[in-house]
Image 1 (cartoon, rainbow, N blue to C red):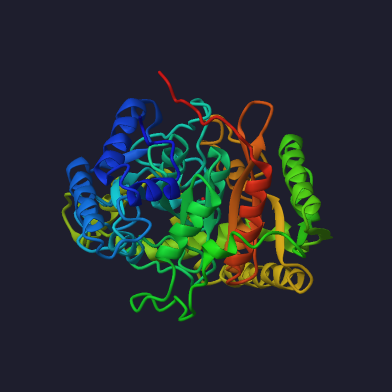
Image 2 (cartoon, rainbow, N blue to C red):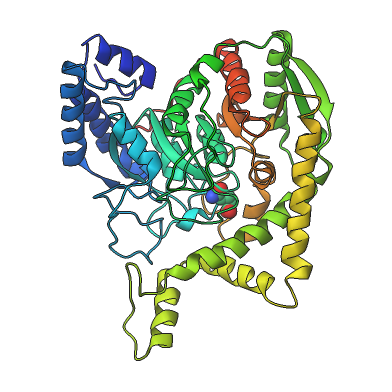
Length: 487
Ligand code: GLN
């Protein structure tokens, strides 16, 4: 019997009971990948031998009862913008050349300490810039529910790998929706934690004031377990806060009684597909029927999210990506002099979307334009954050859609950056305001494509979003059949 459809908790219980070995879990995962990956393109690299060695080490650890953690022996995937020692780290870009991580990101170090088995690195839009996975310099990932459609992005491979039952969980990064939106499109759970909750040490920076690290999993409780393991202060990332990490698994069992859910009017406006609005409203009604109260709220500055994000994120990326100059990392173009070398390296190494963002960012930071663009966008960001904080004076959690539509077709927006950017309208606010947000599946549209319910909490309110999402998940009992991805 194959174990690939199991949740992390089921795998963990079976390991504890001695019913399976970590080696068996890893072998099953590798077999499932071998059978489906050619059609899916979720992984940029698989480390078979390393994974089996880690699995054997986990089995020994369990045998002697040494530092056993619920993740000991569980196979996982990691987005290819994390440094994991001995594995490639491309960030989905050609500019890193044949770079192999010489050090470990804190998030993956914590997974490894727990004894998790990292199978390999998953595909992403170049430097995590994108909403479809199509801006990867290497390959296109397909949505397991419909191979002609995008899985979402930028954590495209992580979401597809979890939905296709390659692995029960994976890590991603979220700067403006890159965990929640692919989770929504692939029918899995994805969590973007509060700013300061999870260390970004060892992850390729895109926009540092917005980037977060979080888990994708097939259900809320597994996602809570993964976040529990990676969260918390890190001496190596001064932006992490020295606050204790609450028990997220316990929060999942708290139920809905007395929970006040705010429903933003702006999240159901024109442009939201009726099938999406309908599923999300039905999910909110389930919360209401079971002890929560719903209250319509307004987040009036939502209309400035796309404009301010697409000024601030490029501005920050233009600075962060200056380090890829042919001197410090990976790829270096042959050239006659230094300036020529910089120019050629960057021209050959960066793809069109990254180039576009560096140009936009450099422009908006240049003297004469700074006040008109960058500073204005920062002011709008403050107003967007204030909208959320005002709302949280009267409610505990916000509920709405993750994306205006379900997964669109491959190729449909790749040449229309503005249309691509607009699809992020409902996820950007969370990162601009530094809030925790998650996506939990709430049904399928008439085409059979997953719809996600987004739950947003106040700063460090992860417990509340886990509480609401876990209760919803148990009540909704979607009972769907995971896609086969058969030939
Ligand atoms: N789609 C957004 C962008 O392209 C968000 C990406 C992300 O969250 N990393 O910037």
